[in-house]
Image (tube, rainbow, N blue to C red; front, side, top):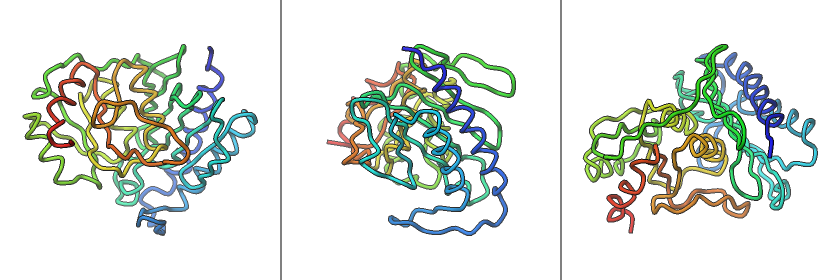
Length: 269
């Protein structure tokens, strides 16, 4: 299976959308609240339009699902469905921080097979496809993704959500004997840091994340050799009738994953 065309198109669209998003960064853009009291801006909507128009034009037989326009009818359960987050880490974006990204993932029969996460501020792009490149691109230079082999959770460098950090994170750190913690908004950027070996572990203990938050990051991290599961070590499900990752997320370098699941089990019976 070759996904080279799909990966290149997704990369092009993510970067194009990122240019639009960046123009609004720190501009005093008006913020609306959608259901769940989540922020949404003109940047989200314009980014989404660029990506969806591009995907539908290039791949008319594929389904397309995006955060700001969800429809079960758009899914292709027996084929390919694009899962788009046009601006992941919107709160960081609104707060004038750098921890936001544009994310495009591709499901093949319900499993992530391709992901692109582009950080507009730095221009860094994490991208991976089954049978194709698995890399981080900085400017004109590409390097293979390479998670660490740190197996001891106590030595793991943790990355967690910025705006959604809860008291549960402190309990998790105590259970794992972790001290090193970094906070950043976008799920995709957190997964990218693990995939490049700059961090070892990401844990999100709540049911806040949705399918468009995890599709591209899971594809990138797992194709790089890491792992992403729910808190119990089970595969994440991509079901159009349930958009939330109800049982949280553990994303790791792979080496420490099973031990993290074991030690956290008493916290999440």
